[in-house]
Image (cartoon, rainbow, N blue to C red; front, side):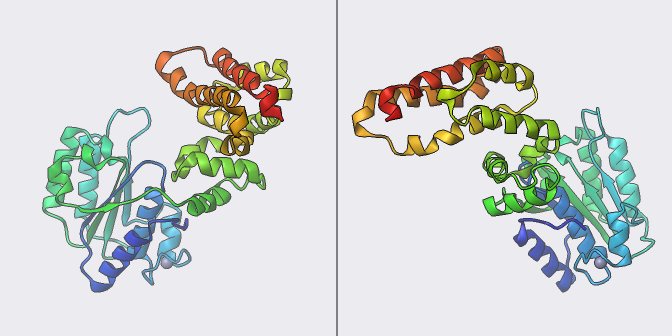
Amino acid sequence: MKKVVGHPIVEQRFADALQRGNLHHAWLLHGIKGIGKHTLAENLAGRLLCDSHVACGSCHACQMLDAGSHPDVYRIALLEKKRDISIDQVRELLGFLALSGSESECRVVILDDAERLSNQAANALLKGLEEPAAGSLLLIVCADAEKLPATVRSRCLLQHCAPLEKSEVRTVLQSEFADTLGADEVLLDLAVGFADGCPGAVSCLHDRRIIDALQTWSKLVVDITEADIGKVEHWCRMNVATVPHGLIIRMLLQPLYPLLQSPRQEAFDATQLLHKAVHACMRWPGEVQRQSIRPAPSLLACLLELRGALRNPVIQR
Ligand SMILES: [Zn+2]
């Protein structure tokens, strides 16, 4: 069973309720996308069904859960290419909850992407929440609880899931990206910073080509004053459509942090120019999105402005 990183309070509350024998029938796990709420839901289901109630990962029940074949667990989520979760999906879910368990005395439904329930589907769900079948547990995973009707929210036990700590993000990325990030500490640091508490935000790093492109970029811009502009221009054209823009800029600015953090009094004007160029770089991802400017030439323009500012002899001293 996948280990949950972060969210210890929710896990503890669930374990306590289970031990006291008064588990609420509907838990609503909400918080921004990409912080492991689904993994947490799977783990909570494991705690309920596991032979020793700890989601041990090795008993028969846990193994079936891991394989996605536990007969007392039903999962629903937004289907590919669908706009919302339909009323039919919710009816099936309610039908499942009304059955009696086959392996255990319980039935568990994990309802993912709940912010995408259609109005009809949410209303149907409400009925199930009002008359829960004995032994049923509904684990609702939702990125934005405000998008659910208040009537649904009020019948659930709300559990807010917060973004992860930096060290937790690092742990997740190290295990999930063992094959791509590998031992590249620079890239790992960069990814941890970019994720900003949300490992899901860097899921693009599963793509080896994006890692390779970022590594090439890092070598190209390690010293911007000496960068080969022909190669930089080529890189921009080839990669600007696939590599997340925030990561491109972070990698571009990373070598400059020491310089930016210790401004020198005598270089006031030059430092101002440098800061202006840095801010232009930081604004670039947003401007590409808002103003539909062509990303490759505008990135190159930012880099050239930065290079001009850095080449000032006062800065270089
Ligand atoms: Zn187990």
